[in-house]
Length: 149
Image 1: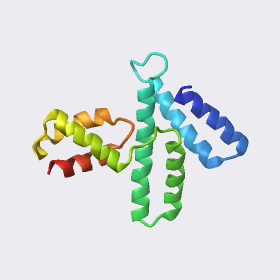
Image 2: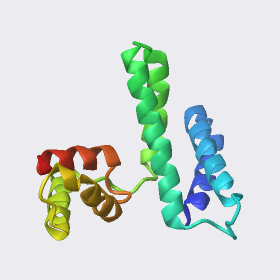
Image 3: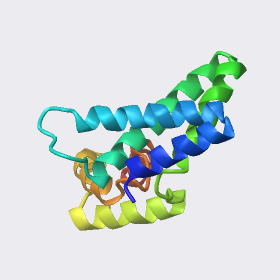
Image 4: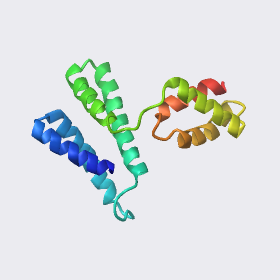
């Protein structure tokens, strides 16, 4: 079942259950999927990889907003972002733990033959491809920087 189909089913359930937060979040995701499908050059449905990237982007936006709201002590807005993030994460693939990401980044460092911080670009390119959908770029970057220094 495609992500779009899952989201549509979730919207129906949220409507029946009168879950306003869930409904708002799922409609936002569906809207982003529909925008991606109507972009120039896209024929038919979008790939699972593209759907995953859309979800990751939505989750990252919520995390960034959450951080800002927490800094500004806006608990009312932060709670909305937390709720939306939880709902989005239900549809994302399982994320790797920090130890698993570190092991994968070490593997990539060995594969590309990185020697120091100057090789950060090579490592990030390969690690990002390898861990796509399983870890966010910020985590990968932090671990790679630590291992290369």
